[in-house]
Length: 73
Image (cartoon, rainbow, N blue to C red):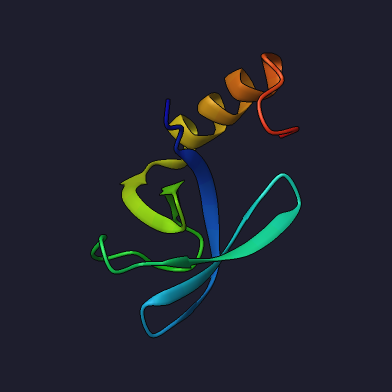
């Protein structure tokens, strides 16, 4: 099973972004998404941002994942 996690874009440099969730910052490729900016939320899977999501949806997903103990979010 594969799981994509909502992350917030903190910094963009070319086609890479620093993204954050649960206090953890990592790099992600933005090659698969268009029109994203710092502060946007995206779904991260295998190091790639695969879809832009609105903040409310991202926060609800993170709340549910935390509730079932996924990834210590």
